[in-house]
Image (cartoon, rainbow, N blue to C red; front, top):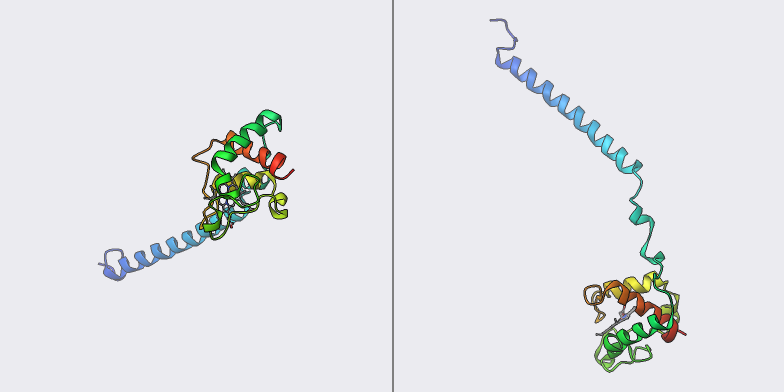
Length: 152
Ligand code: HEC
């Protein structure tokens, strides 16, 4: 039997080492390929359209404003107050207090930001998420109402 041939323990060790080196080279190559793919692949279209830029799909007519007013008085006035100044009946017990929706800060929000805040709520405050309670049309009607009457 030849010394160092495939049949010997040493021969097998050489083969195992060679396979390990080959695997390591392959893995480094794969990791480089993934890194290049991550860097070069463009972000998905969703990220290109931040929620702040969402546009209100409803016409700002009297009917939409009336719908928004009805929903607001039923669901929001309790905390934010009938006029939106953050002075609803429940307000005195709340920390942080309900936002004054007539404030400069609230007026600066885009329609999309307003819609997302209403939809998702504000974690660790009394502000609930409304996306499972009100459908998207109802939430956009709230945006229309807040712009047309509360922030008029
Ligand atoms: C149980 C009380 C409560 C109810 C009901 C409630 N809110 Fe709020 N809301 C809050 C509180 C408290 C905050 C302030 C959170 C903070 O400090 O960031 C808030 C914040 C907000 C904000 C964020 C304003 C900003 O400038 O960041 C909007 C918009 C808003 N509420 C709209 C609504 C609408 C519309 C409804 C009804 C569908 C509603 N809220 C119902 C308590 C309430």
